[in-house]
Image 1 (cartoon, rainbow, N blue to C red):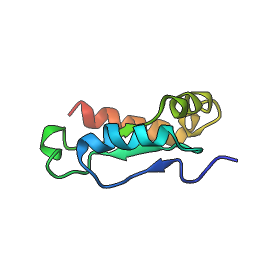
Image 2 (spheres, rainbow, N blue to C red):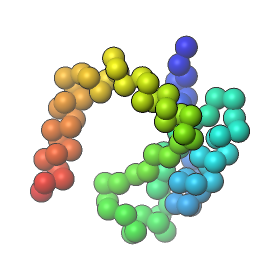
Image 3 (cartoon, rainbow, N blue to C red):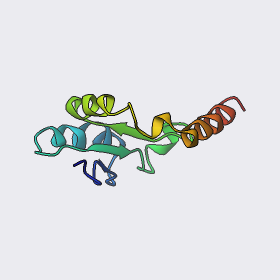
Image 4 (cartoon, one colour):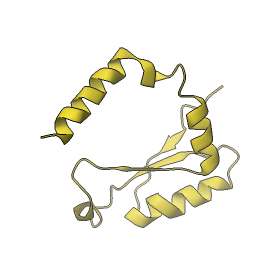
Amino acid sequence: MESMEAVHAPFGSGCSTILTYPMKEVAKEKPRAILGMFDVSARPMVEKDILTLAMPYSVFLKLIDNVSGSFLETESWKKVQGRIRSTSSS
């Protein structure tokens, strides 16, 4: 069974959410992806609509294996993609 806690969003420096937290996840029995870039001192360095998602390579491979049959193949996701495209072309 897949975990409902596959992504962790800790508060920390920009560097910690991109490097430190994901590196610590490697050693865990059930490693997670890390959502980041909430650090107010790092926010000016990235575009306003950008967050980071970092993960151990093993989590990335699992993610790729699960694309088929996931939300990425739904009509709802196509609508979200359309919004992303229209926002990025503005």
